[in-house]
Length: 351
Image (cartoon, rainbow, N blue to C red; front, side, top):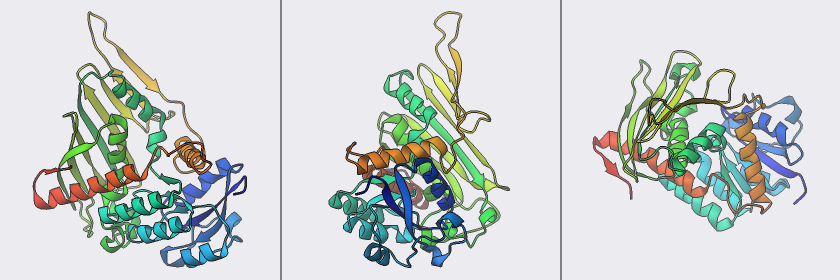
């Protein structure tokens, strides 16, 4: 392996493809993109000119046969992720997989087994695990500053189906298997487990099409997740806003404090509005604003930290990334269970 990692990119026109490639400009001393497999019917509409002369191959097999590279970014539709990651892992290539990595539990198990058996470094695209405010909340819970954890509420509403168009592959059940909860709510499902340090033990949900534009996957809904401590988490959101926009916020409540988290507060890297005890006449109230992050690329500073964590695993400096095959599998299983619980109209327990 050379000092600079050579990394192939699979899935040029993924919705986050250009953002991922921009992110690599921050780590040029450690890694370089060296070859491409366009995927998405060969489309390269978003390919930057600086990469236009690099080798491109129609298949992953051809890429492996003809190029020298140590690792690959896999940014493909859910239908193809398992077979591509299996092929790369069997060839000994380290893997960074765009979330949700897989669209159904059976494929997630295939991916976990292929990566673990090959012993390659694995990272997934859940960048919020590297966010300043998210990690402060995680420490608050771990250190008992919330007291007994009572509830976690998250809202994630974003641009409606019409912004991309109903024909987009994200809304194609054959390509994606699921909709909003697989593509976007997966971030909050992952973060819920990471911040709380707990697994999900039960699911109740209602999902479906709530807007005027019907597609074969769910455009949103709500889910109530039971945590192992007895706390409850409520997720609500969907492709519901009639323009390119997003509404994201969290509230965490405990017996000793509650916190409102606004990840998108202007001119900050996120903000925590913290309310604590009032033992006498003076209450503990605080606002923590994370420094504004101007790092270019998808995920900004947390995205760079995610890449560097992956590089450290490739170099053998850490045993695992903050995202693992098991955390990836847990997320997919919860999404599957949310869809099943809504279809069956009942609470489903997770073992």
